[in-house]
Length: 210
Length: 227
Image (cartoon, rainbow over all chains, first blue to last red):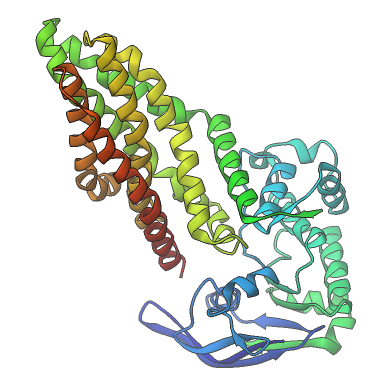
């Protein structure tokens, strides 16, 4: 269970928000909503353990994440708003490198299957990433989700630049993850759409307005 | 799908970075050509007086090596920062200190190692004897990893800055003076037929110390910058 206790965030000298509380149980999804610049990404970076909040704590299974970061990182994946891909590498090389960072070595076949699932064809996965569209880059990054068995998914604007089919694929995999008792923290300015796509989310989603 | 250990992650990062540098090409070739040009300018400018050339050779080659390595440092972490990979490195299941170590080793492979290979040929321009060239080679072999390791601190401190190149040089060059002095002294000693091994031992000591402490400092700087 992931718990946010009274956390506050500061950017420069300005306090962005404070007293944010939330508790996310297994099988729950937390939608973080807010206007541009309201600090959604900052909250996600704090939950991922990349930044430290100026006040409060983030607890994973009652332990503070900063003190048990190695154990927490084993169970968590964070995908930022930027696809972490090397422009010179192809999708398949990039995916392999990202998976290795998580401590997993995949076979070429597994990588290909995952990328095909995300709608990237045989030719596309061999192109250098600088030649790919934003949507294709995003799909390459999201392919990690199909390969990794992590409990906590922290996704910053994952629907960005995805087309209709991509959005459906992501929604489907999110649903499956929640059914398997995973946790999701997500920001999206399309959050209403995401909720509309699937009514199932409504019952299990928490919303946090920043 | 197979779980891999931290050592395996480290080797995969070294391989990844070398592959990336080779594919880009400009990283390695830029450094090497800069090194060759700077070193070759001296005999051209000073003339072919043998004794003078021999005297300045160790200093010239070491200073050129230092500057060439500086030239390539600003990309060490900055590229990963720009495309968001640095965040993933920080969140990896392998501790960041090991990852920084791996990236620095890779940096040495695509810069220092290449300089090392070209150095004997360049040394010939300065009329150095076989024995002195051997010592120059050894000193560079031991000394260039230290340049990469100490340099990584500067690269980490300037992640995300626009004009990081100049700042890295200002931060790091003073710290590299001991390597420069020991490196040139070793070759000078060899030229004048004096024992040189003590300088090489001191260079080894610096290398060992920097390979341990530099990744600690660099990863701390990266964590603070990403916070």
